[in-house]
Length: 154
Image 1 (cartoon, one colour):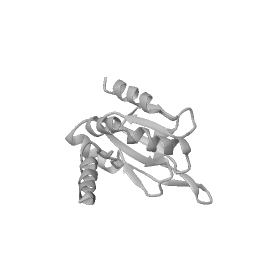
Image 2 (tube, rainbow, N blue to C red; image 1 turned 60 degrees about the vertical axis):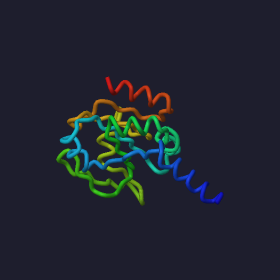
Image 3 (cartoon, rainbow, N blue to C red; image 1 turned 120 degrees about the vertical axis):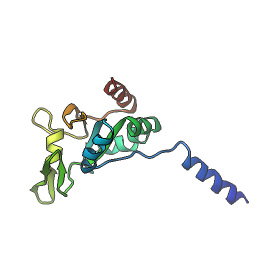
Image 4 (cartoon, helix red, strand yellow; image 1 turned 90 degrees about the vertical axis):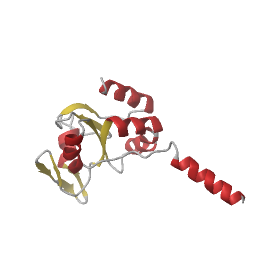
């Protein structure tokens, strides 16, 4: 009986209030913009970047942030070292190897280069026409990210 109660309690908690962040692909954005115009937030990261991993584990796990991103924006979680070709905004972007099993995706360079350099993590905000309206390349704590979202809604 105790196991049944615990099981019901566990499923009750996980099904109420704890929603998941919806991550889109670049290929989906064009069609989504035709249905409903929204800004797109692209989180550009690398697996080896500790600040990127910290943002994933904290900022992007916050329920308030998740709800805001899901309801008001399109969100793309983009690994800068992605190896597959990506077609976005009528252009095909490819992975550019720069050594033995290292490289960066052309789309990460296109969206994440600030002052001729790329540094992770990167937030790139696109308007409804997929034009860059904001870039930031540093760790953003939860409260700072909330302020950013508030400013983007204005």
